Image (cartoon, rainbow, N blue to C red; front, top):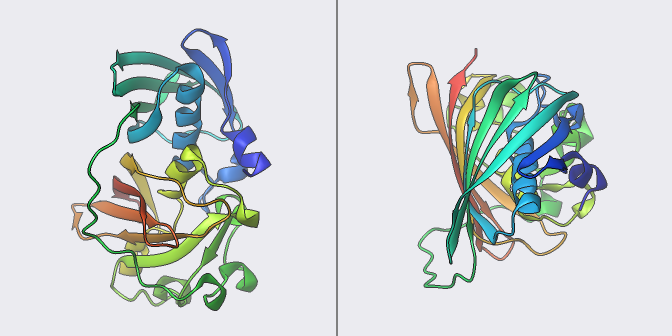
Length: 262
């Protein structure tokens, strides 16, 4: 794993059910606020450190306000259910005494069952044949500097000509081909430029994000990301996401609701 990612998503226990951390600016978006997927990863890793639960399965996080970078955070955890197969954890992150994020996470233990895939991974050229946006200076410092993206073509929004199709498929991974764990996989569900940018929108703020985690990719492998928006209603839009490994196996799914800011 990336040393910074592990460090920046690790919290410290100060009493049972309570942990503290500092949300760093190293994972800021281009708009100067911490990436929501990074905040989700921080809370998820804390839950896994706090309780003896299985692997994460379903995460639902509500953003009550934007977390502030380089400000201490207090995270309060509670074990809502300790079942034989499903464990449920709730958590609230506070800064300056105010609730900022609320997470409900389900974990699975000793679970096996039918697998039957009806979807298909996005069709992309090999990563080495795709464009590296860093080579043209298109990625700002922060989150996108700590990720590697490979684009099959320059997106319309990057040329100042949004193409009107809010569906974007790219390759993505942590820099230097680091191993992806569950916290990193959750973060990658919210780590690509929002496809609504192809409708001429530049900014949106996530209100709620739900992530389904299925399996981890091989160490160092690229992850194929497909993000799409189908509905923009009264200044709100949804974003559906899928992450796939290089062999065409589904890794994770996500859906978020966000407010357009421009």
